[in-house]
Image 1 (tube, rainbow, N blue to C red):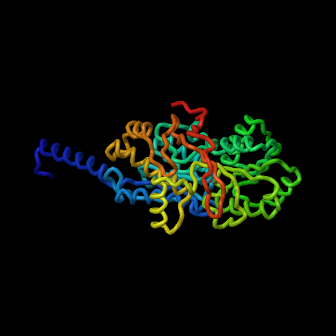
Image 2: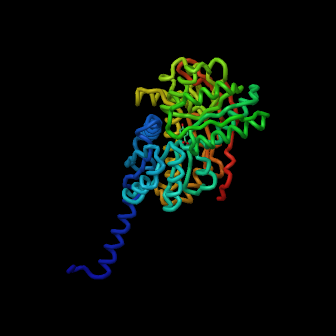
Image 3: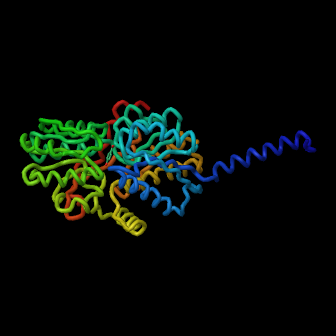
Length: 388
Ligand code: PHB
C-alpha cells in the first residue's frame, strides 16, 4: 500500500503522463526501411538507403531534434510477400513511418497496408501510377516519379525524332505495363504507332527470342523498360544481337542509371528520359555528388537522389510538427507547400503528392548519362483517380 494521499497520487500520475508525452517526442523515431537487398534490384535498394542516410548525417544525425532508428526488411521485390513484410514493420516493430520501395507491385501492397493502418509512407522509387492516383492518401508521399512521367516524355521525344512504328519490350508487371502505356500516350499524340508489345515475366532475362522477333519486324524504334541487373544484360544483348546499329533503343533512364560501368561501350550513345542526370553541374548537385562519393566511394545515381529526397521530405514534415509524426494534417500541409531542394533541381509535390519535375533528355557518353536537354518541363503526373 502507498502512503500517498489521493491528490498526491493524481499529481504523480499527471507528472508521469507529461513525462511520457515528452519522451514520445524526444525518443528515437523508428523508420521502417522496406527495400530490395537481394535480386535484380538489390543495388537500387542500397543506393536509396545510402542517399537517405547521407541526408540524415548532414543534419547531424537528427531530424527536428529526433534521432532515427532503422528497422530493415528485404522485400526481395516479391509482391507475394509484400503485405506480410510491411505488416511486420507496422504491427510487430511499431515503426513511426515506412520508407519503401523499388518494385511497383510491392509498393501497391504497401500503399494498401499504409492506408488501412494510417501509417505514414514515403515511396523513394516505385512508380506505380495508382500510389499517387486511385490509392492516393494524405499520408502517402512519393520522392521519385510516376511510371507515366518519363515514359510519356520519351513518347514525345521518339515521335519528334521521326519514329513512326515502335516495338516495346519490358517485364509484364505494373511498372512495365504502365511505362508502355505512358510511352504510347506521348508517341501516339505525335503520330507514332506501337506495332508490337513484347513481354516477359519479372525478373526474367531470357531476351534472345524476343530480340529475334524485333529483328524480323524491323521497327523504326524500340522502347524498353528494364532496371538494375536486367538492364545491364538487356543493353548488352541488344548490342550483341546487332540491333544497336540499326534500330534506336529508347527508354526511361532506368535502362542506363547505375549500370554504365557494367554496360561499357554497349550503352554508348543511348538516349533516355529521366528526372536526374550525371552532368547537371549545379552547385546543389555538385555538393551532393561530392558528399555521396566521399561517404560511399561510389558515384550516386537517380536512386540515391530519391532516397536523399525522401529524407528531406521527412525532415520538412517533422520540422512543421516539432518532431511529432502523429500530427498528420500539419505534416501533409508542410509538404504540400514545400519547395524541395533536390540535387535533381527543386521540385514541388502535386495534388496527389507526386513530384512535379523536369524530365531531362540524356545521352550516354562514356560512363555518364549526360543531360542534353529538357524533354518535358515541370511535368506533373495527371494523378488519375485521386480524390483528396
Ligand atoms: C518499379 O517497379 O516501379 C520500378 C523498378 C525499378 C526502376 C523503376 C521503377 O528502376
